[in-house]
Length: 311
Image (cartoon, one colour):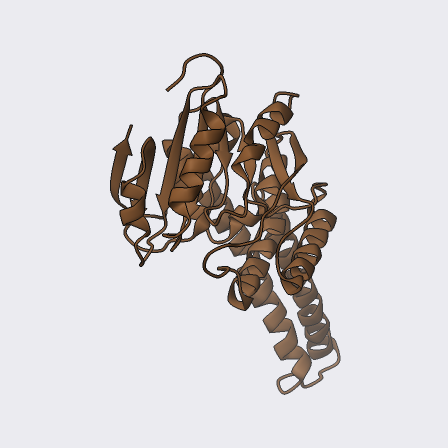
């Protein structure tokens, strides 16, 4: 391993990529060796059920983290971030579509002052349906989060370590890392990168993941606006409903007391009671959310089966 320059940590999450990991490792090493940077290559096997782990154990220099089962890409990235100790952390996918020869360009881009640089697959080598879905998702993300990057879900990124280690990823939140980083106050940039056609296997992205990522996107919007103050959402909503219920019940009470009206069978009575109950419950949710946040008990949500360090 060469000395001089800032150390690069290359983190590669993989799932059932036995045909590509050896070629990808060779490309990464061939790219990094001529650079004046020490480096480490970290593969995170996300519970593959083919021969991926066996292939990874043959690679050197490389660190391998193997999960006990498939926990998802977000958790694989989180494990890689925890393990990495470089001055810069580079992530790329394990399917050979990301070109390791772009790593020096990412390093040059982040040296201009940003905290996170995202790759932009300007000429994307994917099926038309996937391109359209990506454009729609990225357009919506830019609109609602205000983060002006073309390809928020591109796995090819370079981070300063304080950014990567500040993230807490779960579900499909890896798709919105630029938004999470921007929300925490970090400077986010992007650079166009070469994107190559898939050589082996099939894409892991399908309708199910699209639906799940949509739910995670809703979660993201909530987190950006109310993660530190859930009472601002639930409390406001609950207070409005509670006051409407009080007004309805007050009106019915007036009719009962001063006009002698029969209110026991009126639907308005049920509506007023329902508004008061739901309003109180919503306010209580906001209060409980505040208590949970104050506890700040965040933890990892994956299990590591073994680690291999082939230096």
